[in-house]
Length: 209
Image 1 (cartoon, helix red, strand yellow):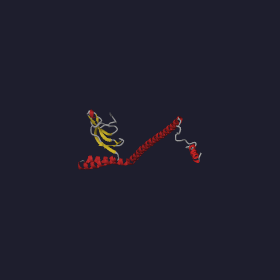
Image 2: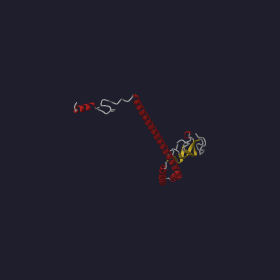
Image 3: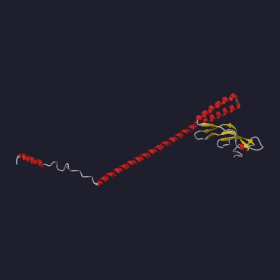
């Protein structure tokens, strides 16, 4: 055998790949079925954990928002209460001024009535900006215990006119936001009394319906 034949034989006998390394025709074995189920179970557990954390986050966010809303409402009520306390003396003086202007306007009449009535309207607008509205009544309106304060009664011989407004003496005032009557309307009321005249007990004091 020549030297060239020996080299050729050595090359043919040399393995194509190092020992322990798979050849091109060899493939890694597929993962066992138990291992795949374990991986899927682990992923499902992680997803459940993330979902639980998101649910807790949304729950806390909703609670925080409700707490903020409640604190805002309480703050608004507190501010409103403080505002009413601060404005109370001013509102009382404005109501007295409105009464005086209206009373003098009715007493003087003529041009003075128009002038003083315009001043009274200006005062009513100031009260409106403070949150109070003026309300009145017409003759024949029924007596309302929560809105009217009777000053006297006027006898009438018509039973249908019993406990109805005869004459408004002073307007009433109501808080716009709450509907609370700040000062009831002052008026004289009819009282059915056949064959008699003059004044008597006010509605609510006697023969109230």
